[in-house]
Image (cartoon, rainbow, N blue to C red; front, top):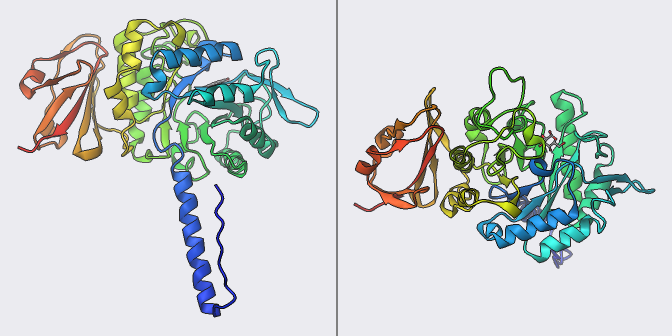
Length: 418
Ligand code: GLA
């Protein structure tokens, strides 16, 4: 947006001129802050290609996915991004401009962006702060401004910027991320900047100040509940939860802890989710991931095959009440009030004095739900809505409930007058 200011300074004395100039600077500064503040003011929602397609991403199937997102009601529910992950790149042309793989993307990325924009959707893309990406494709080091300009020309709305093949030290990471953040700003298009260095350099301490709106807090998720002690790598839902849950103080509108993709509905099929022990989860476990990621204000990136979703997956991904908790305008990441070997309890303040409460049973057997609101500091009277049963419950009814193994119960507490 451009602002044109018509002002005649010639008749003013120097004090007045200075005052007017200072005021103008303040207004413009606030304006640009408000502009940057409005970017990613809520956790992003969409579908990310990596877990299902890995490098075999292509425009035909991405369009199919987008169409399925529209037809299944996902776009209406808020999932408006398609995030292309690694594997789209086709190198550089004679002028060193990045190009898409002509076989995978015969119409080019701009055409895909247009296709999505025409349908009220947005497009995310992927690069890396080195010469090559994690999967070995062309990346952006030393081409930051040129690539940012290309992305802006294509109509890109988000950039996931990875850190494979880059030096391990924090200073270099900060410099490289800042360089790309500045290049994106210079491109003139509001492009959300997602920092992906897997939490190794504690990005929650610096990522926002170098220009990121979100940052991955851990290594990659795999389609499993938890890493077995015998496994060297491959994090599951529970492993990521343990790290991400403690970072609540760093999150807020325009600055989010990114707990990585949802594995909901993958059932251990295809893509890299099958490596690192990604054998699949139960629907109860998928429901838990969705609940906990929503409580933690993590971006909600589905990564399953939207074209072939079963009813259980749809019920999870399309639970509007749970999505509302993730997208609550206050943008407060849930506080972990209790975390022992059997149970985790989370509390998330919401607009209008409401709260969301989530209780996870980590054990491999069902246990009674013990939820003492006064221990959570909630002394007022609340109307309690069970967000998975989709009904109101009384405190007495809550006491009779059981939580299944690996299940998360989730409630919205609405303040009542009496
Ligand atoms: C890294 C990232 C993943 C994915 C792959 C692509 O591992 O953490 O999310 O983007 O690279 O190569």
